[in-house]
Structure formats: C-alpha cells, structure tokens
Image 1 (cartoon, rainbow, N blue to C red):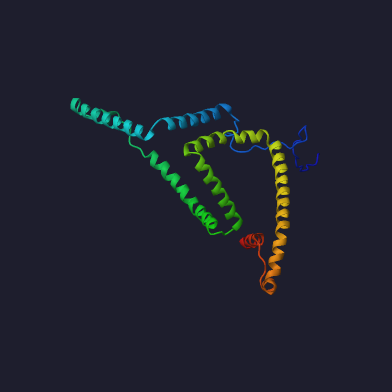
Image 2: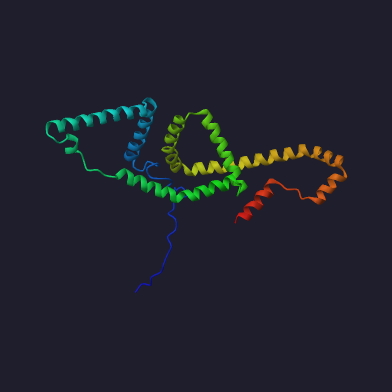
Length: 241
C-alpha cells in the first residue's frame, strides 16, 4: 500500500528562465477572444464617431415626436374604424424593466457611496499627507490634460488605450517591468545628485545667515526642533495605523 503524502506543486518552469506571464485585466481587454473584443471595441469606436458627427439630443426629440404622433394617429384611426385603437390592440403589456434595473443600480451605488465620501474627505482634510499630495499631483496632471484636449478626444483616446495597453503589457510585461526598474533607479540616482548639488550650493548662504543671526540662531536651535516634510509625513503615516 502506498503512503499518501501531500506535495505542493511549484511554479511551472519556463525554458528561457523567466517567470510565467501573469494574466492582467479583464479577458475582454486583453483580446483573449479577438472576435468578441473586436465587436465591442468596434461598436464603441463607431458610437463615438456617430456621437461626434450627429446631434443625438436633437435626433432623440425628432424620433420621439414622430413616434408619438404616429401612435396617436394609429390609435385614433383604429377607434374610428373598428372601435378599438390599433395601438391598444397590438401593444405589448406594460412592464417596469427599466425602473427595476435602475433601482438595483442605485441601491448598489448607495451602498458604496459612504465609503467613497469618507475617502474623499480624508484626501481633502489631509488624513494622510502623502496621499493628499499624490492626489493633488494627479488633479494637476488631469487639469493640464483637460486644458489641452476636449472631452470627446479624452473619451476617444481613453477607449483606444483601454483596449490596447492591457494586451501590450500582458505580452511584454517582463521587458516593461525591467525598463521601469531601470528608469526608477536612474531617476533616484539623478534626484540624489541634484539634491546634493542644491545642498552644497545652499550651505554657504545658510552658514552666513547663521553667523549673522548669532545668539538668536542658537536660541532657536535649542528651543525648537527643526521639522521637515519627511518627518511630518512619517509621523502622520504612523498615527494613521
């Protein structure tokens, strides 16, 4: 009788030595099914082009007026000829499908709304200074982008990128990750060099100011701690936990 032993399967080795590529995003966005993704992507692009070239609001009211007057004429003619309106005779039964779907969506959204509101207030009131600074940078970038591009162009570009970037990253994620690590290291190295240069250039001026202040400078150093943005953020992060 063979004894049963539990074994843990390790990662599947890859011939070239790299780790297996992870699937990211929704299969629709990574073109796992090219026909299905192509239909959705094509429909969105065509809809955006139609939205750009057609006044949908005017078209809606025009079609609505035609549908309503046609319904009234058909109903009147049916009652005049047969005693029962044609619309009443052939219309489908009344239903509330749209209102039910809308109600379900609003209920789901209302459940998530308190958490979203709390997170927004934390950003606004600097619950975490670092996160607030990141959000301010993101808002400024979005402000610059929206000042350069119209809303339609933003939606069009976002749609194209949504259906291209996930697939590109999934196919070339090893190369992209290596490039990100490399450029991050270069950026940190350059930032350290510029910081040292700025510190070296500012040192003589700080020394002169310290000598001119004399006793006042010594009193300030003894009386108050010098605080930096990094220490403030660090304390804020530790207090958040």
